[in-house]
Length: 176
Image 1: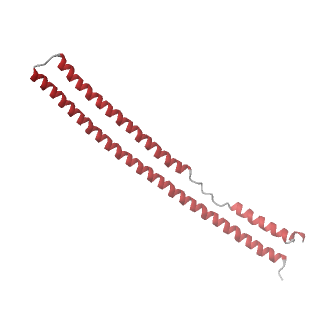
Image 2 (image 1 turned 90 degrees about the vertical axis):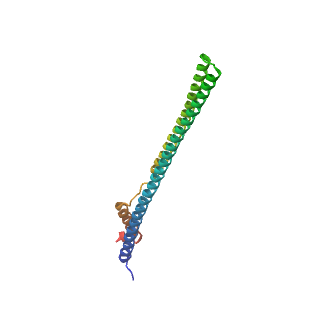
Image 3 (image 1 turned 30 degrees about the vertical axis):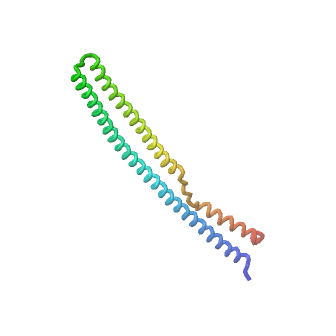
Protein backbone atom coordinates (compact mmCIF):
# COMPACT_ATOMS: atom_id res chain seq x y z
CA UNK A 1 0.00 0.00 0.00
CA UNK A 2 1.13 3.51 -0.76
CA UNK A 3 1.72 5.72 2.21
CA UNK A 4 0.61 9.36 2.23
CA UNK A 5 4.25 10.43 2.17
CA UNK A 6 4.86 8.38 -0.99
CA UNK A 7 1.76 9.90 -2.60
CA UNK A 8 3.08 13.31 -1.66
CA UNK A 9 6.44 12.50 -3.28
CA UNK A 10 4.74 11.33 -6.50
CA UNK A 11 2.49 14.40 -6.50
CA UNK A 12 5.48 16.66 -5.94
CA UNK A 13 7.29 15.02 -8.84
CA UNK A 14 4.27 15.60 -11.07
CA UNK A 15 4.03 19.23 -9.92
CA UNK A 16 7.71 19.78 -10.74
CA UNK A 17 7.29 18.17 -14.17
CA UNK A 18 4.17 20.24 -14.85
CA UNK A 19 5.95 23.44 -13.77
CA UNK A 20 8.95 22.65 -15.96
CA UNK A 21 6.77 21.85 -18.97
CA UNK A 22 4.77 25.05 -18.47
CA UNK A 23 8.02 27.02 -18.23
CA UNK A 24 9.34 25.50 -21.47
CA UNK A 25 6.02 26.07 -23.26
CA UNK A 26 6.06 29.75 -22.32
CA UNK A 27 9.69 29.98 -23.39
CA UNK A 28 8.85 28.51 -26.82
CA UNK A 29 5.83 30.80 -27.18
CA UNK A 30 8.05 33.83 -26.47
CA UNK A 31 10.57 32.67 -29.09
CA UNK A 32 7.79 32.14 -31.64
CA UNK A 33 6.40 35.63 -30.93
CA UNK A 34 9.84 37.19 -31.35
CA UNK A 35 10.29 35.43 -34.71
CA UNK A 36 6.81 36.51 -35.84
CA UNK A 37 7.64 40.11 -34.85
CA UNK A 38 10.83 40.08 -36.90
CA UNK A 39 8.99 38.71 -39.95
CA UNK A 40 6.19 41.30 -39.66
CA UNK A 41 8.70 44.14 -39.25
CA UNK A 42 10.75 42.94 -42.23
CA UNK A 43 7.63 42.67 -44.39
CA UNK A 44 6.51 46.18 -43.40
CA UNK A 45 9.95 47.63 -44.13
CA UNK A 46 10.12 45.81 -47.45
CA UNK A 47 6.69 47.15 -48.46
CA UNK A 48 7.71 50.68 -47.45
CA UNK A 49 10.86 50.41 -49.59
CA UNK A 50 8.83 49.16 -52.57
CA UNK A 51 6.38 52.05 -52.15
CA UNK A 52 9.20 54.60 -52.00
CA UNK A 53 10.85 53.13 -55.11
CA UNK A 54 7.55 53.23 -57.02
CA UNK A 55 6.96 56.84 -55.98
CA UNK A 56 10.50 57.77 -57.06
CA UNK A 57 9.93 56.20 -60.48
CA UNK A 58 6.62 58.06 -60.80
CA UNK A 59 8.36 61.29 -59.85
CA UNK A 60 11.08 60.82 -62.46
CA UNK A 61 8.55 59.97 -65.16
CA UNK A 62 6.38 62.93 -64.18
CA UNK A 63 9.35 65.35 -64.26
CA UNK A 64 10.44 64.03 -67.65
CA UNK A 65 6.91 64.35 -69.02
CA UNK A 66 6.71 67.92 -67.69
CA UNK A 67 9.92 68.90 -69.46
CA UNK A 68 8.72 67.39 -72.74
CA UNK A 69 5.34 69.11 -72.38
CA UNK A 70 6.96 72.47 -71.62
CA UNK A 71 9.29 72.08 -74.58
CA UNK A 72 6.33 71.28 -76.85
CA UNK A 73 4.50 74.37 -75.53
CA UNK A 74 7.58 76.51 -76.18
CA UNK A 75 7.94 75.18 -79.74
CA UNK A 76 4.24 75.79 -80.46
CA UNK A 77 4.53 79.35 -79.11
CA UNK A 78 7.66 80.01 -81.20
CA UNK A 79 5.85 78.79 -84.31
CA UNK A 80 2.86 81.01 -83.53
CA UNK A 81 5.10 84.06 -83.01
CA UNK A 82 7.05 83.35 -86.20
CA UNK A 83 3.88 82.90 -88.22
CA UNK A 84 2.49 86.16 -86.85
CA UNK A 85 5.69 88.05 -87.64
CA UNK A 86 5.91 86.67 -91.17
CA UNK A 87 2.23 87.34 -91.83
CA UNK A 88 2.52 90.86 -90.51
CA UNK A 89 5.66 91.48 -92.56
CA UNK A 90 4.10 90.18 -95.76
CA UNK A 91 1.01 92.29 -95.17
CA UNK A 92 3.07 95.35 -94.49
CA UNK A 93 1.64 95.71 -90.97
CA UNK A 94 3.96 96.87 -88.23
CA UNK A 95 4.00 98.81 -85.02
CA UNK A 96 2.15 98.48 -81.76
CA UNK A 97 -0.52 96.07 -82.95
CA UNK A 98 2.07 93.51 -84.09
CA UNK A 99 4.08 93.98 -80.88
CA UNK A 100 0.91 93.49 -78.81
CA UNK A 101 0.08 90.31 -80.73
CA UNK A 102 3.60 88.93 -80.17
CA UNK A 103 3.46 89.81 -76.45
CA UNK A 104 0.14 87.99 -76.24
CA UNK A 105 1.83 84.81 -77.54
CA UNK A 106 4.48 85.19 -74.81
CA UNK A 107 1.76 85.61 -72.18
CA UNK A 108 -0.13 82.55 -73.42
CA UNK A 109 3.06 80.48 -73.29
CA UNK A 110 3.79 81.68 -69.77
CA UNK A 111 0.26 80.89 -68.59
CA UNK A 112 0.41 77.40 -70.10
CA UNK A 113 3.74 76.72 -68.39
CA UNK A 114 2.47 78.06 -65.06
CA UNK A 115 -0.56 75.79 -65.31
CA UNK A 116 1.66 72.80 -66.04
CA UNK A 117 3.97 73.71 -63.15
CA UNK A 118 1.01 73.97 -60.74
CA UNK A 119 -0.28 70.57 -61.85
CA UNK A 120 3.21 69.12 -61.38
CA UNK A 121 3.48 70.58 -57.86
CA UNK A 122 0.05 69.15 -57.01
CA UNK A 123 1.18 65.69 -58.16
CA UNK A 124 4.40 66.12 -56.20
CA UNK A 125 2.42 66.93 -53.05
CA UNK A 126 0.22 63.90 -53.68
CA UNK A 127 3.30 61.66 -53.94
CA UNK A 128 4.64 63.17 -50.71
CA UNK A 129 1.33 62.38 -49.01
CA UNK A 130 1.53 58.81 -50.35
CA UNK A 131 5.10 58.55 -49.05
CA UNK A 132 3.96 59.75 -45.61
CA UNK A 133 1.03 57.30 -45.62
CA UNK A 134 3.34 54.43 -46.51
CA UNK A 135 5.66 55.42 -43.66
CA UNK A 136 2.74 55.60 -41.25
CA UNK A 137 1.57 52.14 -42.34
CA UNK A 138 5.03 50.78 -41.57
CA UNK A 139 5.07 52.50 -38.18
CA UNK A 140 1.60 51.14 -37.38
CA UNK A 141 2.84 47.62 -38.05
CA UNK A 142 5.80 48.25 -35.74
CA UNK A 143 3.53 49.67 -33.06
CA UNK A 144 1.20 46.67 -33.32
CA UNK A 145 3.90 44.11 -32.64
CA UNK A 146 3.26 42.15 -29.46
CA UNK A 147 5.98 42.12 -26.87
CA UNK A 148 7.20 38.57 -26.33
CA UNK A 149 6.53 37.53 -22.75
CA UNK A 150 9.03 35.03 -21.52
CA UNK A 151 8.42 32.66 -18.65
CA UNK A 152 9.10 33.56 -15.06
CA UNK A 153 11.20 31.14 -13.03
CA UNK A 154 9.73 32.62 -9.87
CA UNK A 155 6.21 32.04 -11.19
CA UNK A 156 7.05 28.43 -12.07
CA UNK A 157 8.54 27.83 -8.62
CA UNK A 158 5.58 29.45 -6.90
CA UNK A 159 3.23 27.25 -8.94
CA UNK A 160 5.16 24.15 -7.91
CA UNK A 161 5.15 25.27 -4.28
CA UNK A 162 1.43 25.99 -4.36
CA UNK A 163 0.76 22.55 -5.81
CA UNK A 164 2.90 20.94 -3.13
CA UNK A 165 1.11 22.86 -0.37
CA UNK A 166 -2.28 21.87 -1.77
CA UNK A 167 -1.24 18.21 -1.89
CA UNK A 168 0.26 18.43 1.60
CA UNK A 169 -3.05 19.69 2.99
CA UNK A 170 -5.12 17.26 0.88
CA UNK A 171 -3.15 14.26 2.14
CA UNK A 172 -3.52 15.44 5.75
CA UNK A 173 0.24 15.37 6.22
CA UNK A 174 0.08 18.53 8.29
CA UNK A 175 -1.75 16.63 11.04
CA UNK A 176 1.22 14.45 11.62
